[in-house]
Image (tube, rainbow, N blue to C red; front, side, top):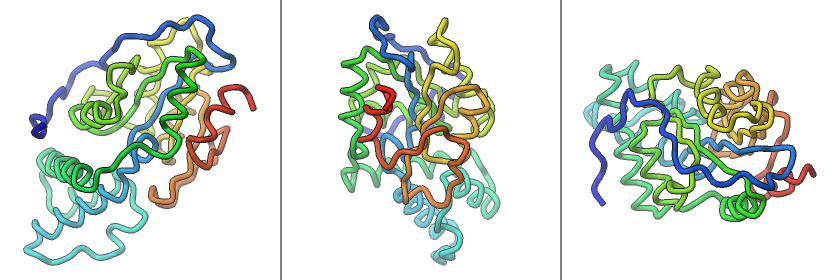
Length: 239
């Protein structure tokens, strides 16, 4: 499959998908909202590889300094590209296209424990959604490759015209899909400080999954700290 058209879905509202039945939802969560990069798929190393390739091509072959890449979030890498070369929209699209090529080249699959976590959600009748600051075409492509696109109750992306994380707006928009459940009955699963702050500010319950490839992150505002997605089923049962 070729890469999607640049900017696909820009300015569109958060897309609502077929919502699974919610009968028999296990307390205390009515739904789970996942971040994408670093939570569902370990894309972080490939974002940094794409940044290095793009920076070299734009700087006439000069490699980026190690300090420009090490421990940086995707947003920080993107901001560094913009500050160095300008043209934010063009550079962002090129960056994410490179990431897609690298994910395909290296056959990057789901994060460890994701399949077990999704199975636990299905068995408990708990719907899920995805909240990401990345381009919609990129998010939807990744979800299709993970086999999650059709089952997602809601997908909120950086193409939807909302303030990005750490603003609460993305999680607020996603949580509205699950009304009348209050925001506090919706669990956000994040790996970045900005994502955790966004979820907490929106009034959601939040679990942080530690990912060493996500760099130094302040995950302390999250109520729960998980070593991997393998621990999510126990959390769903209140353990």
